[in-house]
Length: 438
Ligand SMILES: Nc1ncnc2c1ncn2[C@@H]1O[C@H](COP(=O)(O)OP(=O)(O)O)[C@@H](O)[C@H]1O
Ligand SMILES: [Mg+2]
Image (cartoon, rainbow, N blue to C red; front, side):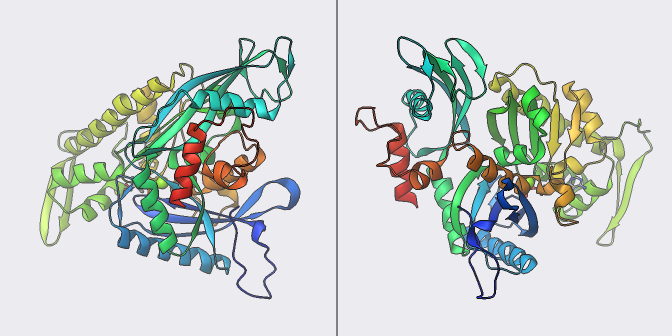
């Protein structure tokens, strides 16, 4: 799995004691290092390195050299913090064209009830995958069981060990363009780290933010980043939908820059200082007045708040609402959980609560109390979530299945689907694709 490289004979660290996550954000690249806490299966974050991200736009790598430079700086920052060289990491990335597609699968367990074994779960997963056609140039990044049913009873949390005659599954496949994965892999390896796993950012962010209660009752997480918003809908303990929207805080900055006719760096400064979502009614004479590069600027404040609120309204009332609808989840008592740098805007939670008519909570990383001070804010939820993702996958390898499950941990010659005819399955196609890639 993810590990440190031993860099000195005196080092007390053992490879498997450490977990490393890498968050490829549009504003910054973050490297998170966690140390395992003995046999408890938990891990404590001991270091977070970061660097501004210059080669990524709308979540997608647009400049390899710049991305590699940013990565090297972030890795070095983390290595300095923990006093060790890092060797490999689980990488969280996003990009346009991320699709989550759900398919159903069914297998018979026999004419009389019998206990479900792991092999049955693998078989039913495959039966759902057989129904999925992956378009050319795309690949399955995650295979996530969304719901199990036994003999028609839905909502089975874990069928392993339960008795029945018919096992059904609803399976979510997260499909991404192969080229995006290749670019991510190239940049990270060129920056000197091996890729031990990949995770789509909204999944990592939601695991970094949601309490166990929110995961069960039903909640939607929005990671409001620089160039993208990650959206995930959870219910009954499992993710039901994952999506990336190519709109983020940078769009608000650009809107402000256009309205005020100023460069984006000044607009970014103004955005962070102003209360753009405040409840107080603005009077016509309320103006934003400032001097910049020897020029005096003045703009009615209500004009500015209108523009920003329109952008956010479009994002939440149209794009994010569409993703919630696509999840098929109709009850979300856990409400909307927002995180990421964009959730730092003063008053955005009250504003959104009215807009989406749901309870809204701005979420720090769940682990923030045990993260390095000043690197434990909302911008680090995704990074912290990568560690939770890796640990959850270790605890239950059938909860989030990705290429490491198929091509590394499981030998293809192993009897993962031994009783099935030796036809080329989607599973095998994915394995082959990854073999070519890595
Ligand atoms: N105080 C603030 N108020 C409003 N927006 C903020 C604030 N601080 C950061 N942001 C915005 O958050 C975004 C970056 O969020 P972050 O989660 O770090 O992004 P990414 O994961 O894409 O790198 C930027 O658009 C930035 O302008
Ligand atoms: Mg982020």
